[in-house]
Amino acid sequence: MKRYVYPMLLVTMLLALACRSAWNSPQADDKTVIAQHGQLRVSGTALLDAHGDTLALHGVSLGWHNWWPRFYQAQTIDWLQRDWNIQVVRAAIGVEPDQAYLQNPEAALKQLYTVVDAAIAAGIYVIVDWHAHQLHPQEAKAFFRTVAQKYGSYPNVIYEIFNEPTETSWDEIQAYAKEVIPVIRSIDPDNIILVGCPNWDQDIHLVADNPIQGFTNLMYTVHFYAGTHQQFLRDRADYALAKGIPIFVSECAGMNADGDGPIDQKEWTIWREWMHRHKLSWIAWSIADKNESCSMIADEQVPAYGWSESQLKPWGKMVRQDLKRNNK
Image 1 (cartoon, rainbow, N blue to C red):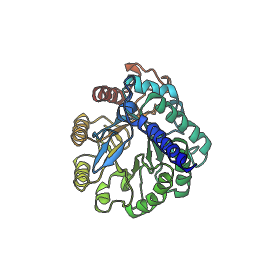
Image 2: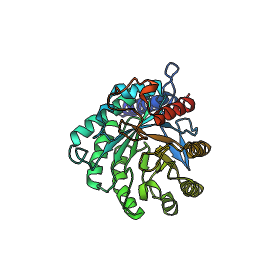
Image 3: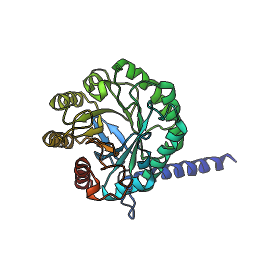
Image 4: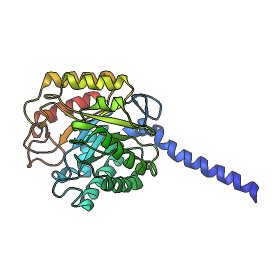
């Protein structure tokens, strides 16, 4: 009997490898982002695709799920992929506000699943963003355990475990990350994990001097609003990159840090060229209809998808143009 066990075991292993590699290889009849790039990994400061090529992803973030749930639907994601050429979408799962995850986890997960399923169907990447400003380690571990169990086998998923720490030190964020990351890694050994840094993701220089050790496929987030965050933040990011810290710009926009005010065209152009030069991924904020300049949809009367140019605010038009140019 034993001489038949080993061939059967070999066949099983080969089938498992074939299933995984099917995600990692482009198909002749499939030109989706996932089919072209497959499983992601981090090497040095670079995000690499399944072929070992450096990849910079460009896309948009949905607004907080608890305030703009109408955009958390499959048609919105499909439209953004087809008309805006997004490669990645970020699902901003609000944690602390009224009717966000802490109060209503079932609704949050339902909306998240809709977005992730739509991203998988569209063949793009999706960031699962724990959109918190304070530490909630136990709730975060439960959330990411649930998400990893459901989607950890898909190469589409990127985990963002702490959106924008406000009054939290890097030591505290490190300790939190060292609790949450093993929960994900026990289920999903290889998809990318994004870690925030202090002061609304501005203090990347602190990460550079004391990065997290012992885990692979980690990247650190930098957020900027071009009207407020200018050369000083690029200098900090340059310092981090020079020290080998991989950066992912998981939220950015062209106006002031409060999300309002005029678009600083000059600084946005400088930032965009800086990100292109360093081959960094960026996610523009946000698909929402709030009365502020960073919300890309004109108003609440505009449908949740299928937008004409006149139904987009100036920032939405700019981002759509950038994405269509970058993501050909």
